Length: 68
Image (cartoon, rainbow, N blue to C red; front, side):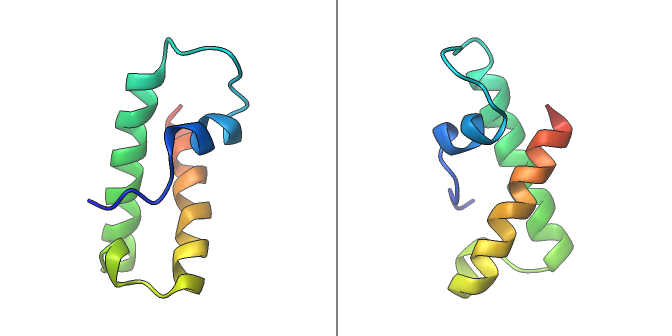
């Protein structure tokens, strides 16, 4: 599974500053969100164009936010 976002990018989106207690949980949510988006679009992240990747990054952030 491709890493399209770093943990720090996701934490910034979630507005988590100076707290590391949920890092493992957030990483799990990130992996699940990437898989979820890949399933919806029926493509792997590695196959996307730069424009499609930018859209999918936003989708993953929204899904992680929903999970969290």
